[in-house]
Length: 63
Image 1 (cartoon, helix red, strand yellow):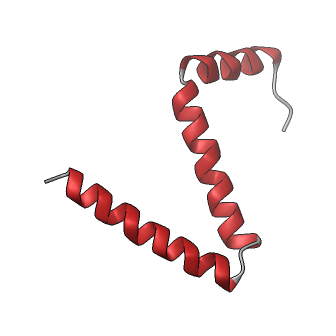
Image 2 (image 1 turned 45 degrees about the vertical axis):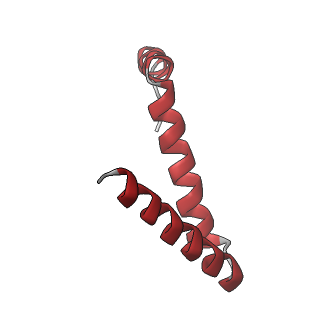
């Protein structure tokens, strides 16, 4: 898919205006890709523990 110059400018403008959201989306995509394509059983076990800890942390802060 070829982007027009106008679409490229619009994408850049959105990215600059929404830098934090764009970074969040990129990091989330990288994490999912790693889990689906590169992770080992050890990696997944470690990630499961990290996820459990993070969920507990979030649950505590939402009280």
